[in-house]
Length: 227
Image 1 (spheres, rainbow, N blue to C red):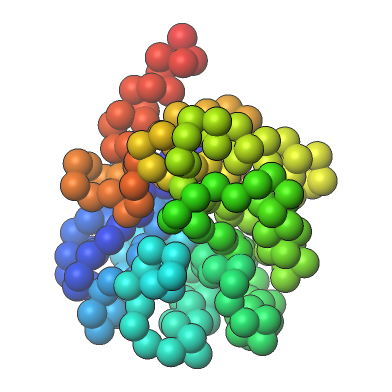
Image 2: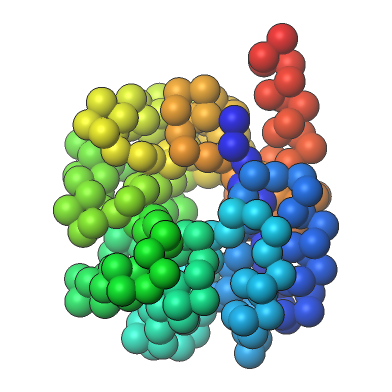
């Protein structure tokens, strides 16, 4: 059951402190550089002690980056050059920019994996549309797909969790769960169905998305469920 802690911060120094705190608590850290002013990627990547995902989230999908799409993807390309283990980019990004990022991965150090993601902070679309998003990401060359909509009702979790076996039967790695209070159960269940990882916050007030449990809560639930 692999857990990823998102690191949100306003400055590089704050991010470094949170990375130090989180590195011993989870299998992965997700560095959310979209909220960091004058981000120093060299310092941050040199400080990592485990698997690191670099994300520069667009505003439409819950991020804070205010520059152009070219500038946003350029920072992810820089993370690839510096040897990031993963980079996360939205499926909705222009095809030419996704191709540019993939080319950087192919010509770089060679081990960076591309997560192509879809977030919907308003609702959970129907299963057909969710599968369409998944296939769109697959067609764009994702190493790992990430599908995360907002659960308006508890039944929404079933649609999203159903994507996990659907993807794995096709040889695809996927991260899939629901946001929001109604979606918290999917964050716990997704790893048991084969989700590549699940996200948990560093502590109360550190949530990067609605419905996110703390890493302590997630680990306690996993211990109980495993017996």
